Length: 480
Image (tube, rainbow, N blue to C red; front, top):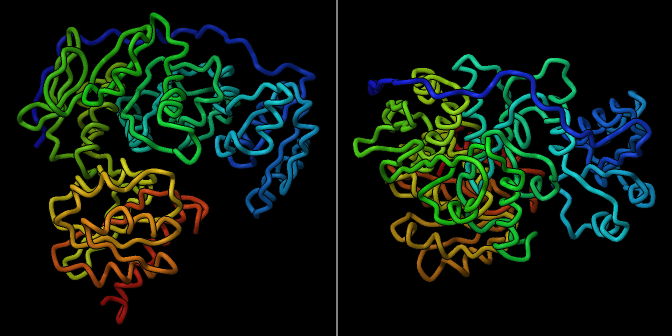
C-alpha cells in the first residue's frame, strides 16, 4: 500500500518559453568527419549534413552493422565507409565528431591531436540544436536505470520527455526533429563528457563515483576529472542533484554554480529526497514535502536502486511532476534488461542477469542486494581494478566461478578468502559450473565486474548469452 503524503505549495517549475539560441558548431560549407557508424554516429552525420556540411563518416569495423550504416548514409548523399579511416581526410576536417568508444590511445585520436583538429562528442553537436530542456545524468553506476526511470516518471506526470545519449534515441536524432520534446533525459558517460564544450544541463545528476575504466584512464583522478565536466558550464539557474552518501560526489561538485539538492538513503536531508526511518521515500523541498512510496514497493532489486529512485524522483519533481505521478511511476517501473534481471528459478535456485555490471563497484552493489547465499560468476576483459573489495561480501558465499580473460586475476585476488573456480572456455561452461555449486535457496548472480569485449560485442550480447545458457539448464537433462 502506498504511503500517504501531502503536497504543500507546488515548487516553481521551469519557464516553458522559448530557449536562448546557441552558437552553431557547423555552418554551410564546413568539412565534418564522423568517427564511428553506430546509431549516434549515423545521426551525427545526418545532422551535420542538414547544416550544409560536407560530411565524411567512417568506422574501422567492417561488421555487417557498420557496412549497412555506410550504405544507408551513402544512399542519402553522405560519403561513408566501413573498414577504415582516411586519416589524412579526417585530420584536414574543420570538425570531427568522435564516437565515445574510440580511446585517446587510438591512432586516429593521436593523429587528430597532432593536427590540432577540433573534436567533439555527438552529444555536443546535438546540444547546439536542442530546444528541449536537458536533464544530464552521470556517475559510475546506475546511469541507465536512472535515465530510464526518470523518463518514465516525467511521462507519467504528463510531461513530453524522451531519453537519449547512451540509451534511448541518439541526441542528434532528437535535434533533427521539427518538434522536439520539452525535456530530454541524457545519460552521459565520462567518455562523452570528455569531448564536450558548451554542453550543460538544466538539471544535472551525479549519482556516485568509484574507480572504473582504469584500462583507459591513467588514474582515478583523471577519470573523475572527466565526470566533473558535468559542472563545467554551470550557471545561476543550474540545478544539481547530488548523492549525499558519497563523499567523492560532494567534493567533485564543490563550488559548482547553481542550486544543489541532495539524496540520501541514510536519513533526512534539508533540501532533496531521502529514505526515512520507516523505509519510505520522501521529498523535502522548500514549500513542498511528500511521501512517494515505501522502498519495499519498488520492483527493482537492491539498495542502490533505492538511491536511483530517489534521484530520479527528485529530478522529476524539479522538472514539475506532482508527487502522485512520481509515486505511481516508481512503483510501476520494472527495470532494464541485464541489470539485476531475474532470469529463472530452477530447483529453488534464483538465476540473475547483471551483465551491465562492468566494474567492481557495480558488482559490489549487486552482491549487497541479496541476503541469501550467492554463487557469483565473474570475468571478461579486466579493466585494471582489483577484485579484493568483493571479499568481505563473499566470505559466506557458495563460491565464485571465474571465466574469460580476467579469470586468472579473479582467482589470484579471491582464492585465499573465497572459493573460486577457474573455468576454461565459454560463458555456457561457467553457467554449468555454477549450477553444480548452487544449492536450493541460493542465488546464481552473473555480475561480471569486467567488460565484455574478450568474448562479446557488448554487455547486452553477453547478457543474452547468459539467459540462453540458463534456459538450456531448464530443458530436460540440462541441469545438474
